[in-house]
Image (tube, rainbow, N blue to C red):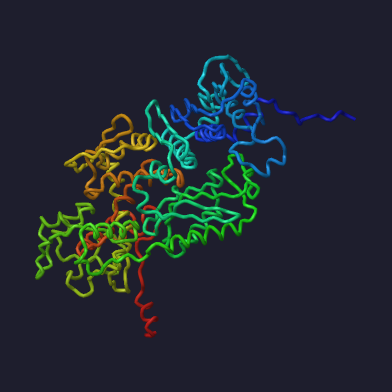
Length: 618
């Protein structure tokens, strides 16, 4: 009988630590999160963050917390070394951010780490320089608190490093993490330097002031305060007014006992509270703080500690839903739009209009009046006046309109290319009229029934094709601004804009990059509405990120889709009949008039037989 071969072995510590680091340290933002939480647990009142190379080169956290003795500093880098818990019973009532004792151990296994720390009332502090398992210890005079520098992340695991995203993407994750933690503790002052430039400076303040600093100065124009206390659960914070709903998932902030978490249960409760007020694809902004006994939640679910379980999930769900619904119910959901405004001041009308249009793609937008100088007897528009019509549509259509004053694209071969459309009747024939339904859909009779076109996605398809053609032609046309627009961006958005600027230039944007994350807009494509240049650029950046992270689109396709989505006319923009005709004709000149670049249908047909059946004619 031969001896069995032993194949199960205990992994060396340096290998097991790297495996553990894969759970805790997924990207630079993970390191930042762990170190910031350690500083908060250490009772810091001021925390400074220094970032270089999107966190790949350096992440440094400096705090004025309680600091560590030499013994504690050396012990802190060992696996499962923690001051937060001491027995298994402590896991049932965790009140600190950290408790596993894995963060520093995992970080030092995939980066070079330097720690300088000094406890209060101690003459000398301790310096540790750690390169994997080699530790150099020195004594010195350091400020009270702790400074931790993490350099060359994943330098010894190149497989992990190559899976990191671009610098702009990683920096975006870093700033998002920084903002979330800054929101959770407004009483702490936070600063962030990116490549030696001070990017964020959040002073100690109340929650309302911190929200203004992190989100926007005017955020309180669109949110409602929420507060309710019970013996079991307290909730406080803010939710969006129904007129300020978002098209992005990225602005929902939930904190349970001041810990940022992601909870499908709470998210669903908030969404349910809005009920029929939410259109498809809309998301309510919210910043909510839930407070309850740590014994009633489990945060030991995932190494990232961003998932939790409630011991009474059903009642927590119902409580949140009822409180949010009550708060929304106190807000006037019916704005006075469309009535006699003769006695209202211009300021009142402006405020009312802004509240109404802020609902995004589902409301009317103000539009300047145009004088078309139409010859009503002949149905002809002067050539000069065509330039005033529907300026967002490709001007190539101008020639076709002026050369063909009686074109009619609404026969049953409507799905063919516009050049093949039969010139069957003049615009004054009863069969050729166009009707706008609630400024969202264009209706036109065809031989077999009724054609319905979604005006927003139709224009989106037109602009998408135009963008792709602009990339290929490389002959940009820019509309120069009379007064250049200067804006300050997040460092992540600044880097992203730089990386895609060559494509933006081909579209017609002229952007100059200055120091301190400032960009100057000198010119824009003719499709961008006057006065909305800054907003449009912000919206393109936001849409680009959504496409990049959720849909993983190729750069050129991503920008074309982001541009077309954010510059297209909206559902709610009022069009004249001639503008609708130009839009339709341009649509059928595109490569794919049936679906928008994101796959949504543009056109539907309702057969005449369907109407006959509904009216009992069959």
